Image (cartoon, rainbow, N blue to C red; front, top):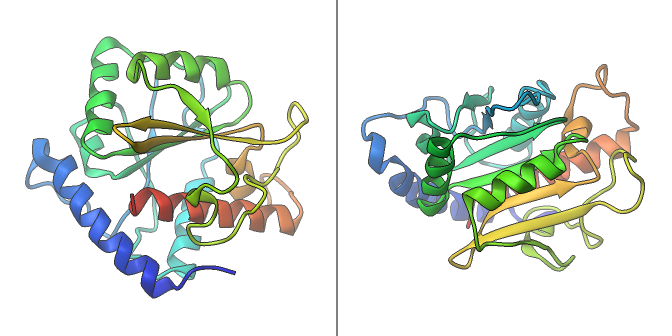
Length: 230
């Protein structure tokens, strides 16, 4: 079951329009062609920020085919200190290892969130403690909280009454969905101990069962719809 594509597209259209105005105040005149896209966030420290290269293209294709949203075929890639960061209402971050940002990059990311930007971070196994440490620097005083299964992100398009789907075992146990809020708005969604990105990859990369791949795609669409409508 999913929400009406028309309802979602109208809600998201006006939300993206508003967020776009807020985000692009510092880079007026720039306009990414080809519809909405997601930008992969580059980072320092040695971790593989470029992991899961087929995940975002597959997610964008799913958003395009299953909703009425105007999306580009390819994701972008931005560093925190790129002016282009502010052209993207939503950015994505993944990887397996160490994450590090400079003081200037920390300030830029804080500014991005304050202007209305949204980050989906998806632990690809091994990123967790590094990501949490950097997030404490970016948004001090904004703790990471586990989201209840009734949270709207689990119902924004498809229904996930038990929260995040479990795609890969990793450390065993249930998956966890965390949020970080700024002035009452969730600016970071963190999916942990599930690896949604691997489920979004081409089947030749990760030969997950079809039901796992479908669950990953549906959850990814939910995250996009939620990010663009809040």
